[in-house]
Amino acid sequence: MGLFSFLKNKFSKKGAPEQEKTSVEVYEKGMAKSRKAFASRLDDLSKRYGKVNAEYFEELEQILIESDVGVELSIRLIENLLDQARKEKLTEPKQINDLLVDAMFVDYATSGEAIQNEIAFRENGPTVLLVCGVNGVGKTTSIAKLAYRYQKQGKKVLLAAGDTFRAGAVEQLKVWADRLKCEIVVGKPEEDPASVAYQAAVKAKQSNYDLLIVDTAGRLQTKNNLMAELGKISRVLGKEIEDAPHEAFLIIDATTGQNGVLQAKAFKEVTSLTGIVITKMDGTSKGGIILSIRDELGLPVRFIGLGEKMEDLQEFDLDKYLYGLLLGSAE
Image (cartoon, rainbow, N blue to C red; front, top):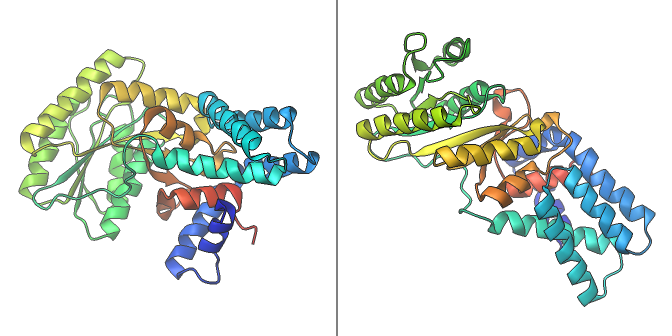
């Protein structure tokens, strides 16, 4: 059974549990722009060619690149498809497109570190999540959505406003904390972020919090300062809470395309990232950035933002992502 058929069967609205249906619907809606740009272009390409030829593969490669799959990955996928088509004497566009989808799945599933989504909470003491990202990517909102998610799971969550030098960053996080009725540790204006992290770590230990989420500055243009700052925060947290930070998420705006991949590379140089959170996926027609990040950095996408509602920050699911990108509400 090809992946197209598998995904259709797996997410059949007739047989899927109610919770699964709701999650799939969020992916369908959030991936609508990407699906229209990618799946419809594949379909149009297939209709224009009765049999595949060199021009077909060239156009297919261009579709991948323009969908933010990344140049290197796109070239590799097409070269492998060409090789397989020659060996198996495949000439039907639908056969090639099915193989492409299978290859996209396999590449994500086998690239880099093991796939993990949810935070693995420690049995004793707080779990510490460090959140990074350049200004404007939706970092503060993502922190709020993560806090909301784990509050709904019954976890006691504490926020630390460590982006102390950006005007409005602390106030924005305080507003979210008030809405969520979530405790927050705030320092003085322009206070050393590591000092705020230290205060939060002490509070998290003393008051038996399950999760401490630490916001950090996003001044990527001063990489040396950022490296020193993140290193200092990590050392302070590690002294107070064993092995902290236990997770480090990088927030990336999907609408920035390949610039988001460059951001990820830069942040990976300065801190030990454990995963990516993709925001604003519903606002872009280029859904391939997830595959590009995974291929180039080996990092898993842990959560994906598919809308503005708090529930629209979804645990990343490769099957649902491909279903949303390729099939959606086609049934």
